[in-house]
Image (cartoon, rainbow, N blue to C red; front, side, top):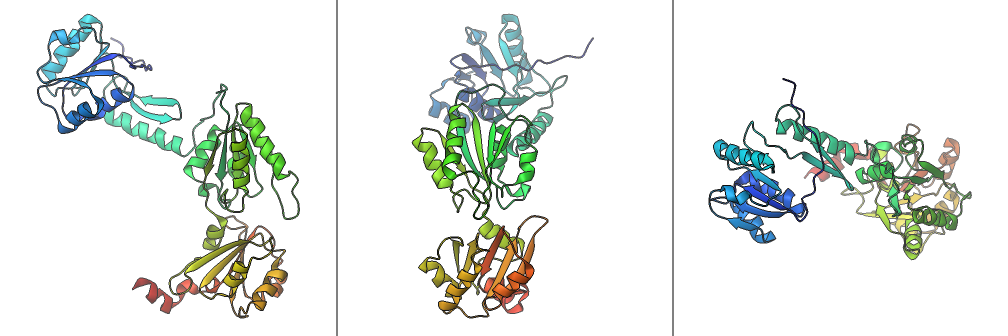
Length: 413
């Protein structure tokens, strides 16, 4: 005799009659799946587990407190039997076989004409795992969990092959540039994308992994060089979404921290295009961290001030530079260093205030230049620092901070 082969099918039970025989603990998990599928469920059991009784009450299910009878199988589509008594479950399964009713038999080592798959979901796609020749639900669940993990990490092909008719834009923060610092949600959206509009500082290695037929549009800006104006980027996102495509706007850092994500989200909403924003690890925190600099540290800095170095310094930024208890992080500020140093000295910031410039954080090209306010311009010139770089002003930028025994004692008490 040949090996018994199982065919995996998708079965909708919406608005169909399902008889559930048994009211034990197993019923809780199984009943939820039938309820979620929209089935009309009738539970028959002499005794109900408290959680089963709760499900029946909450969802208004029909229930009968007695042993199952042959007549209970009349006019039902599917029967699930899980009484915990193999003889009863076998009898119910046999009746179903005679009447050509689909049946799930949950007794150990037995099964009816159907088995529930171990399921996981990717958007509107359901993935199920069932045993073929033998019943091994534990193995199926472990395999399902492995597939689910790969789906969550965006490692499986999630992209639609048929147009959905509903375009969408996702503004995804790619973090400081390392591929493993983008969020799981961001990876999934990239795996589903038809179009990726990418900044210069986004995680480039992830873009290289996309399907060859995914349209990748580079719109990266450099200081003083904006080859694709922001208004044109907004139009690009809207046009592609209106064409029914899933668009990911992949940015470095976080979309809403000097990433113009607010402008792009507003443009999409004004055009009637749905938009989601996925936060990213901000370089304002992550890049100093890569150099061993905590932007706040007990006994050293209790505040964090983040500013755009390209813009004119606000009074609050000048005050933060002068405040010994505040860490000031400046982004996009290399070209503006002379102006920033002058403003800090005018505000009374002492010349020995520690400063660190961290270039290309979280990449193989990372480099840190440590200095003080008094020597900053000279040291930056000698090191030929360049963008992308994050500049940290404050005592947290002092070399050896985390090895200071006095501070270590203060933070562990």
